[in-house]
Amino acid sequence: MASESHHKENLHNLQLEDEGQHRNPSEVKMSQIVVPCHANHCGELSIGQLLKWMDCTACLSAERHAGCPCVTASLDDIYFEHTIGVGQVVNIKAKVNRAFNSSMEVGIEVSCEDLYSGRHWRVCQAFATFVAKRTDANKVQLKQVVPCTHQEQVEHSLAAERRRMRLIHHNIMQDLLNNKTLQRSISEESHDEDEALSTERTRVESVELVLPPHANHQVNTFGGQIMAWMENVATIAASRLCNAHPTLRAIDMFHFRGPSQVGDRLVLKAIVNNTFKNSMEVGVCAEAYHGDEPLRHINSAFMTFEVLDEKGRPRPLPPIKPEPQEGQRRYQEALARKKIRLDRKYIISCKQTEVPLSVPWDTSNQVYLSYNNVSALKMLAAKNNWDLSSKKNKVSLYTVEESQSLCFRVEFEMEIPAQRAFILLSDLSRRHEWDQHYTLCKLLLRVDEDDFIYQVVTPSVSKGGKYQDFILLASRRPPCDSGDPYVIALRSVALPSHPPTEEFHRGEVVCAGFTIYEVSKSVSKVGKYKMMVTMYFTLKCLRGFLFCPQICYYNQTSPEVLPYISTDIAGLSSSFYSIFCACRQYLLDNIISTSAFTPSVL
Image (cartoon, rainbow, N blue to C red; front, side):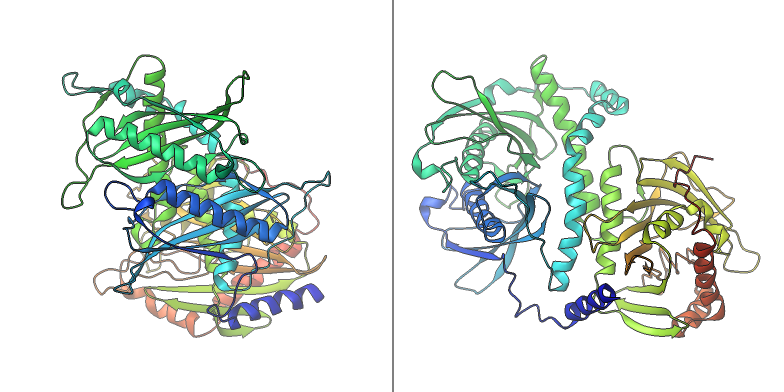
């Protein structure tokens, strides 16, 4: 029970911690005033210079945590929201969100400060992966990050999901390129040969000699310096296409594939891969050689540029005519990356109120929907403002009301191995055995070993009304490290093969699920997070109304259900409480079974 006390103490500390006074041990800050030598022709800070500062700050943070030299391994997508002018101050903050074996995720926040008006605004946010490199032969084993504030708890939890997404990034691209629908849409695209521009005019090649000022304290070429050189040639390529000065808006996720040292010749190549309505993608490759040795691939990156008019609005860009073979390959891959980029930004970066609840599911965005599903549940679980509404026989009901949402959390403890509870609760096809509000739960699609899509049918709220159905993505995650919970997350998706029908009212779920903590070897703490009502409080419509997903789901089209909701909000009603008693009994009755969770499509 010591671990239970420790877990509760950590939660208590998270609630009492004053984030304004807390300073993360790995946190590093850098402030730089932008002078003309840092700026481009428009008097704005060069993105290449900004990348150098960001990489330097993040590296110092990683080394502070690791206690040894670190190198940049990768950088996630970066979206630049604003430009920074000469005379303004750049404030960069970096801290380690989570450490794994020998790698760690470093979160980077960049803001701008106007010294005359005192205004501050966010420029970008980034997540970089650094790898610790010891000078001796001992194996690196990084110490764990201990989050002390609510925000640190959230980032620590989400870092595991972001790492999972990075590891399969290459596979996502390959799967999309093999998608026949995408290939068909690419082949059907037509170009006006008279207006299309040849990409050969945008080709740029430049060589840089790596000198001691370009190296870090490990005598390797500074990763930020390589990124700055790459940004430079990419800008030239974009300028040649539009005969204007472009603005860099985004950089796709990229990985450093090998080191470079002082004395190397760095060959940088850039070319416009494709143009879209108001933007273009430029591909950049960095290779190195020393003496007579062959070229070594250091890095490849893909940057998105826009050309702005006098009012700051993106100008339309001319179509391009790809060259045969290699040019055509780059053209097609740019289209695939655009879809991935939009999926990531649309599903992951946007606030939930900006994204339709039932996002269409397909193979190209399944990873991002899964990430969104799990991260939403983890963010809900990490909230530190839960209020205990009622407690009955060790079953506790918590609520939290924020803006236009009301969330529920039901928590209880019981003697059953956490992994066994995880397996049993993951299988939604057996939900009807303990939840009387589940009339049917049919597995429609097994996406992979961790993600499944179900159709759930629930009774009508009103007497004589239609039954309701939901298309739910169930994403499950075992613990990444000791102390992490088992996670089972649910959210609505739209499945083209199962559109809404006249037979049912189609409901939507914002987020629901379970977190299961192992308190001891025989006791699990089962927290059913987002046992919640999510309402949009408008008098005209209550959209996406979800009540207690672990009990039943409703898509509210009238206020008739509010009295039922009010009964459970006021306390644990008999029907509410009986559901969780049935759940506990279901787990106890199946504790001996050792069958694995391998559902099949019905």
